[in-house]
Image (cartoon, rainbow, N blue to C red):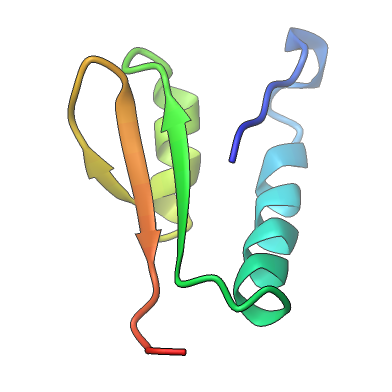
Amino acid sequence: MSYELLPAYHRKRIMSEALKVVLDFGFNELYLNEILAFTNKFNENSKSLLLKNNFILEKGEWMKVFLRTWFIV
């Protein structure tokens, strides 16, 4: 998963709403077991958004964030 917004659209909850729809579709329509997101290690807003949506942070040169389901499909 990847996303980017122009600065004029930051802090308007656009990505929060979009992420909910993407996660719902991915897990409930496509039956995915895992969704990955990558963000720059300095992008605190993006990391915060992903963590609030149950992603798990793995540290590295680039931040890898994993969302794992708690059920087996």
